[in-house]
Image 1 (cartoon, rainbow, N blue to C red):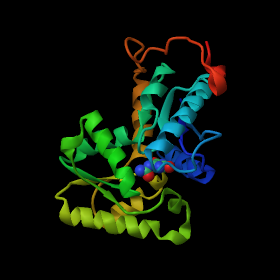
Image 2 (cartoon, rainbow, N blue to C red):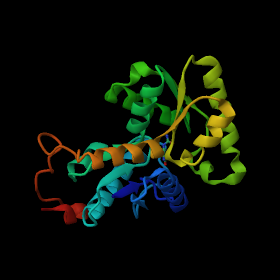
Image 3 (tube, rainbow, N blue to C red):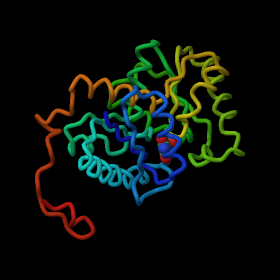
Length: 243
Ligand code: 2AL
């Protein structure tokens, strides 16, 4: 089985870390290809960053279609371009936020999210609402870490995330914590051991769900709104998308 794990930002070190975490939980026989767009923001911390990155995610799905990809993972916590990506393939496409929300509700009645920056918290809140998980989430918390600090050993990111998770455990009356950034993919075990709660991490959750859907031959429905987009002419820098 071939799973393409797309890091929507263009920071290669983060893509490699995400790929290693994905491969660590993958079943024997699953091959992970971890990629990121050639162009776009180095980190995704705003609605603008998300909008630009969604074009890169679509490009990565189009590349994956030429390689016989069995399932895709979008490894950014805003799930940028998720529905557009689903339109481009028959394979399942899983966003790390939706994967984490689903698994968290199966092991707890209430969870909190610990994400990077307060301003990206609103993106998680919108997703909770649109996916129907708002009632399951007590609180969206931020450790106030810029995304690229997760790539910097000197930034004490782990300590700050652990501190925020401990506050969530003490104050939120929750059973589990969802980590709110693809760049936290390698931290779940250490955080769980330090905090003493189940820690749901989206990249690993999404890989296991992607394997499950692909092995059950459950691909993206092409009946209705997720059918391939209608062919049409694109202009200017998107002319190559014309069909
Ligand atoms: C993210 C993420 O997962 N990757 C990135 O660049 N920005 N989202 C976030 N809330 O920090």
